[in-house]
Image (cartoon, rainbow, N blue to C red):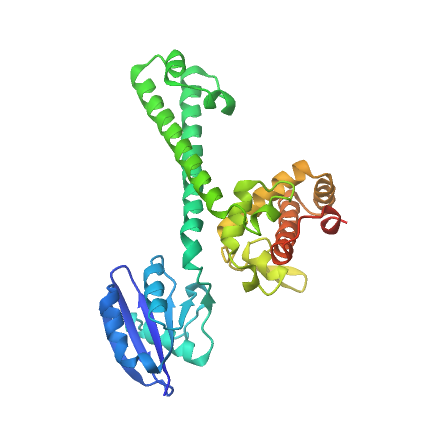
Length: 338
């Protein structure tokens, strides 16, 4: 008789529930986040367990890895796509765990993708680079604001990139203001070093792969965007179609229409925000450097508006990259903007 496991994962514990084919509860316990205790708790049922449903929380990596190493078939449940029965008055961790197991048993569990462990660290390292870039940009804007407040002059990015403490002191005479600005400048330089180090490490790890050079053949997609698209996509075969991939990259509109009128919006955050950023950036640069993309963008602007036109270009690029990664062929502008 097959058994189905549901795990409601939290920061320090994991409520585990096991049901059989008749949905009778066989095991129910709150376990600490300790791999030894979890594997020992599941061991008596090991040969009967058909699958394990783990809730996709911020800390799911370790639990999924442990279960897969033990040979269990793991399913990563997508909380955003799960809807429990309406009218329930009381919910707790036990109920959630058995709800996961029940959906798994019925074959209706909405699942997320378990990114391969071997490439997960490289992908997360690139995400860390993105966070450093955001912090650096925020500090640069703050420093420019400080200088403008004190002098009335706005520093350009080129001037700020060449700025050192001595030049900064010539501009800001007040010692406290200078100390604050100097601290920001030193932090910016430190972040730039870390960003460069991360880029060098990632390029060394994925250089020579079959997908990365193909993506950089697209006008507007350089090394950083190419690496982001390749690593965030993972195995492209997991997407059934180009449209599905474009939807995952948030390059399609999210709205509910009826009788020619918009009745609401869907989940605009459904998908990968890093791919969304990558294709938005790629669309901007492609319009700048590719004449065919620029003509297509201008034609769309005449019919709709600028945001919709940018999204249309991003959508085309996402679908093009899907086929490029799948077929391992370089970009052909005439096939995309004919």
